[in-house]
Image 1 (tube, rainbow, N blue to C red):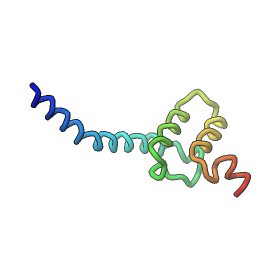
Image 2: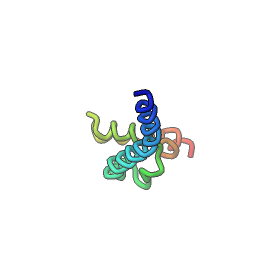
Image 3: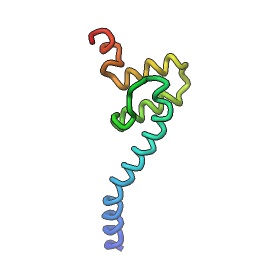
Length: 88
């Protein structure tokens, strides 16, 4: 029983990076379909996993289109954030 538990733990540890990569791929696909509607010239592949998850929740949230645009630009940051628009 103990060997089985250890083997199972090792197998799950080895599979975790593959599962994380697959989850990121799904996030990229979900965000990439609509991202150009809110922010032009931004590639979903260039964003972090946290940014992708935040953008996806905004896209499918109960916000108006203008609210979604503002929130997504804030998540992306850089020249798309308010600070970037004012000081760049």
